Image (cartoon, rainbow, N blue to C red; front, side, top):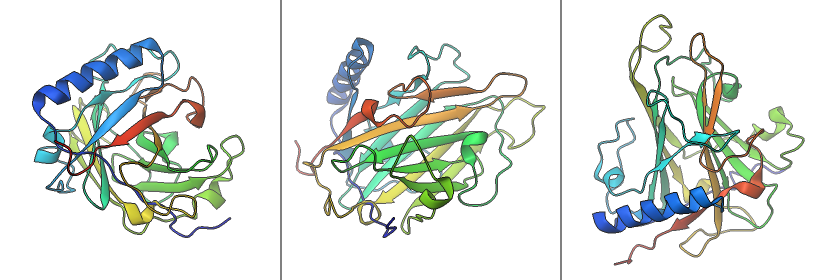
Length: 259
């Protein structure tokens, strides 16, 4: 299996507040109807600073999506557990942010490509070519530990082999509003920022990414709070394993010159 850093990306443009609200309502309607969800990624003239703080102008114009219960596809009722995802892009980078409400923020992992999904983490799966079984997986823990891999067979994943992929240009940052790994207190939330250059995402089937590129994507969160059963949230619910490319949503990259 080739590991050429064959991966890169791009998305949308800053729109007016009214346009953002309209799209948010439309996306909600699509989600409730059970159809494959679609997200518009706005183009940003000013890249967000990757520091874990979601106060950049780029995020203020991004269309938010709220993750659901992965098994049932229903709304996460507890406001202490809700997860919001934001996406935008500029000419050479895709930016993704997670805003995770969490009363118990923790992780024991400290090294890249450890099994972050066994504890608390956010995840992104990105598919930019015509082969559904091939896609990029990115995970980030509350301690800003990264797991990155290239899946080629979602039903029989060889974790050591797929995780040999190391994205060279990716940047991540985490901001914890609480006390990481102090399990006996009450935390509030943690935020994740990811900057993924297009050059890290392209492959032989899709050597360039632009507003015409057909991109499938899904967002996830694994949450395991003290004394409670672990929970899994997603944008487009997969019911069981997250690795179900047939239900990934669609990401639309708004062109730079969109009015």
